Length: 143
Image 1 (tube, rainbow, N blue to C red):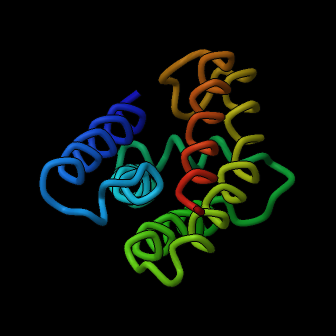
Image 2: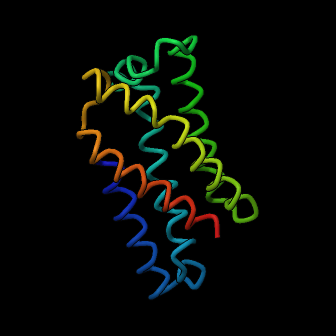
């Protein structure tokens, strides 16, 4: 739930700042880029810090090799995507790549919810809705 709160709050505050002070942020796509960047920095931290790292490793489907390395790789990709969102010329590509990453990682969430393992923050139905919001924000940020 914390990533959703970060996304909504940072995006909203960025948009408000744009309306009041900074013209560039007077755009939902630009504000969403800042919200997503903050959210992905938060979620990436879980890929490197206990106890969440262990839970994320447990979520990796067993047919995939080197779960710990995959968790590290996805954390690095989230950080790279967050940085890319802050660089206007590459932000649209970064946003679409992050949307693709969310889609690719979602089966781990399904497996974890069904098996009762890993990060257990919400039921699968709610997680699906939240993941859809994250993907939608990425698509918005691509424009």
